[in-house]
Image 1 (cartoon, rainbow, N blue to C red):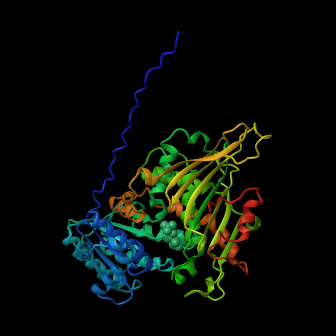
Image 2 (image 1 turned 135 degrees about the horizontal axis):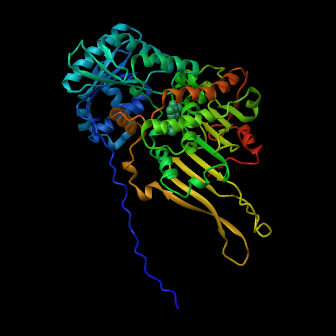
Image 3 (image 1 turned 180 degrees about the vertical axis):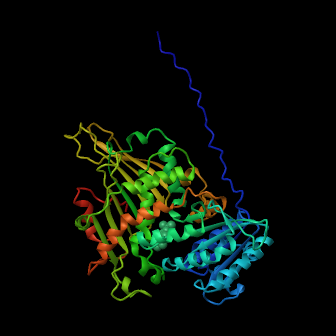
Length: 520
Ligand code: BG6
């Protein structure tokens, strides 16, 4: 009897129709501390302008503050310059004009109590004009000044916390008997300068705000390709069974930048690469790769799983550091503006971490990051183990095992590398790639940039993509011993701008018989 072949009807699945819910994001009063700083000019204000342009925010007032005396017009000029540089032809004069009707500048000293009284007056005024009770304090000042802002808000909070049930809804009797204000605070990274300062900052913040109103920003979590890691891992059934130490040999995380410190010498001298990138962006990427599936997508369910990863990261003993950590500084860093001539601040970091839990036991996580490297590229390579038996070992010398690479930026894609038979009479294998490129499936222009996504989430009250109190403290616990040990060193290695970093970083990984995977 012949086999009957029936034509399969292909079910064409529709994409999930869940829409990003932008309601509640429309009206607010935002106070920006550090409103004329680098971050505000390059990231925050451009993101707010774009949200306004896309119609995602309406009825709002942004009050940018800074020490320098400026009129509104002068401040607008400053931001316009930054925006035009970024957006080039996309800058729209008529939208900018409407945007500036909601953008104000207030020169003030954040260490003075009077500042907070003035700002409170402005909040009440613009809240009434915009018919809103949603207030956002955005703290974009250098780490050492954050505590001044928190203290200032705390002292002034006595005026607006007449009744506080510690759920974050503070009732103000001073301004309006019936008004219930929703006050949130957004803090830029690094959150503190070590674990001790982060704990103290958290304690002070929690005297003024409830945890549910504190948004500790890490813009890497707002990147579309970083959010996708959870979907890639948990919306498919084929990857999770092999996503563990039975199949994975090691993981490589690279956050390479081709730019230097771009005139941010003063800021950078206070942080260096570990506080700037490792303590936050790299550890968050590690958590997204390593975490268990959350029980749901509620903010705390997701954040619990990320925190569990940080809790399991193996602490470095002093004696381990030399073998597992490399730092370096690019040539001529010390010649840049606002840099100490004998600065030892590292601009490059490479390290080998372990996550001591059931899934990741004995799987090394090699991470590296640096400024002025050969190119800008953030990627995560999952390197699988070799097949148990080299069936073709005699005829083919190719030994490379499978790998899966998640390219976070700038070319957003995912690639799986596997062996196929090299056509011909020999039993030899050939490595090929299977690629998914965002640009081929989605309109890249429609990907919401990280800052826009995070601002909307904050306005909506969704903390999933923000760091939690316990998370920030444990992240410092991981890096503090590294920073302490490096501070004690008298010298720092150097590397050539435009390279992949110092030779010692290659040696770190090569000691384990592995190489950094570079596509160039
Ligand atoms: C910031 C750092 O958090 O991230 C900068 O302070 C760095 O030093 C930047 O350049 C990198 O972000 P991105 O999104 O360009 O990778």
